[in-house]
Image 1 (tube, one colour):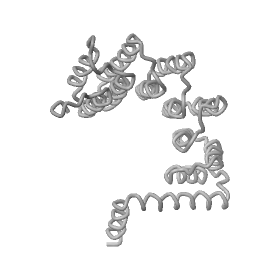
Image 2: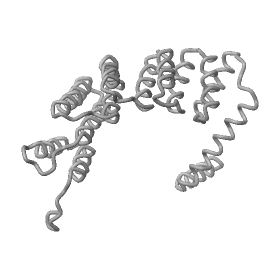
Image 3: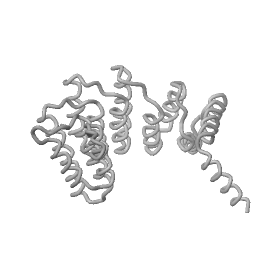
Length: 256
C-alpha cells in the first residue's frame, strides 16, 4: 500500500491487529496499537480496535489450564476495557459481550453482573448473546433456575428471543440434576417457539424420561422434531458436500 501511495485507514490497521492476535503475537499487536495511539497519528484507534484485544485476551485465557494465566489474561482484558473508557470511547454491545463471555467462562460472575448492570445504565441494550453467556454459566454450575430466569428476563425486557443455543445448556443441566419433567417442558417450549433441538439433546431427554419412568413426548411432537432434524441435516449436506462424503465413508466402513 505504501508503494502504491495508498494511505491505510483504521480498518486496515484493525485487520492487521486481528491477524496478529489470532496468531498469538500480542507483542506486535500491542506495538501497533501504541503507534495508533501516538499524538497526531494518521489512524487513531476506534472502539473495534480495543474490542479485538478484549476478545482475544478472553479467548486466550480459556486455552490454558493454568489458573494464574487465566487470571492474568482476564485482568488484561479488564485493563484494556478501562483503557478504552479512559480514551473516551463508548463500548458497544459487542465489546460488552466479549468481556462478559470471558468472565462467565472463567467463573467471575460478580464482575460479569457488574458489567451487565453497567450496560443498562449506559443505555447499551444487551442482546441474546449477552444473556446466553449467563445462561451457559448458570447451567454449568447447576443453577438451572437462574438460567431459566435469565431467559425469561430476556423475553420480558424485549432484548431477544431464546433459541436452541439458549435452551440446550439448561436442558442438559436439568437432565443431569434428575429434573426430567422440567427438561421435557423446556424441550416442548423450544419446539413451540420454532427452534429445532440438536439430536443429542433430543435423545438425552427421551432417554432420561424413559429411565425415570416418566411420560414421554407425544407421537405427534416426536415426528415433528425428527422431521425438522432430518430437514436440517439435508440442508447441511447440500452446503457441505465434504460431510456427505465422510458419512458415506463411515457407512461403508461400518458395513465392512
